[in-house]
Each structure stands twice: as C-alpha cells, then as structure tokens.
Length: 136
Ligand SMILES: O=c1ccn([C@H]2C[C@H](O)[C@@H](CO)O2)c(=O)[nH]1
Image (cartoon, rainbow, N blue to C red; front, side):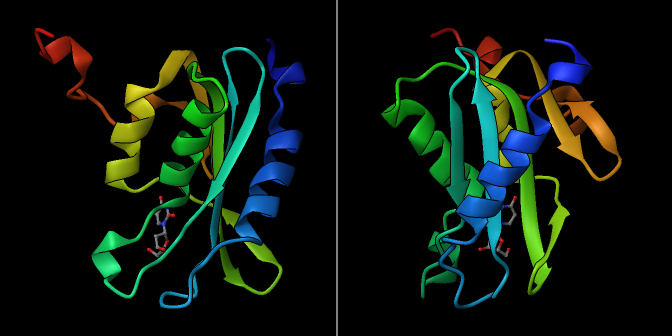
C-alpha cells in the first residue's frame, strides 16, 4: 500500500470514535487508538482507568484485545489520539509499555503516524527486547 492509499483518515475517525468512549474519570485525559491489521481489518481501543490508578488500561491495550478477539494478525498502520480540551485531539506517541506491546504485534512494515511524521516502531523503541531474545 503506498502513502497515497494509507488509511490514515479512516484510522483518525476510528480513533476519535474510540476516544469518545474512554473511561478516564481520574486523569480526564481521553485516549483513542486505531490500527489496520495485516488482513485489512480496522481495530480501535480507548483508555479504561481504575480507582487503583496503576491498573489503568491504555487505549493500545484495549485495542490489542480487539486485535485478538476479532481474529488476530499483525498491525500495519497505527495512530493514537489524546484529548487535551473538549474537541481538541492531538496525535500522541504511545507510552513505553505500549511501545513494547506494539513491537510484539508489529507487521512487516508497521507505520505509525505521530506529530513529527510517520515513523516505524524501531524509531520509537530502538533495540527492542522481543520474541527473538527468547528460545521459545
Ligand atoms: O500511550 C498512552 C498513554 C497514556 N494513555 C492513558 C492512560 C491514562 O488513562 C491517561 C493518562 O496517562 O492516558 C493511553 O491510553 N495511552
């Protein structure tokens, strides 16, 4: 798929829709992520906070749940929105834990749209620890 046919506008719409469903009563920072899978499915997720703050699920975590619940595969295109003020979405880069999760499920050429442009997972997580480090 070339840059012209990359599904960024569909992913933006899906991430915005997911963000609107976020459960973020503590930080008030809604997050929505979306990805296109290797077989062309569109998946999305939102953050789900918890009174025990550390138990919070990032948007990327719920999105990966959807990846497997809808048939598995790997990620080819990904982006994530955060909401600073009502109606104002900004592209955010995933937190460290979510970079590791994206790395695990990356497709052959995962492209990530960020505020500074389109990057690869190796730009966000160089020298990643991954399945290649395990004998299993
Ligand atoms: O990549 C990220 C970073 C943060 N958050 C959420 C977690 C928490 O609910 C809120 C503030 O950190 O943003 C995500 O969903 N994804």
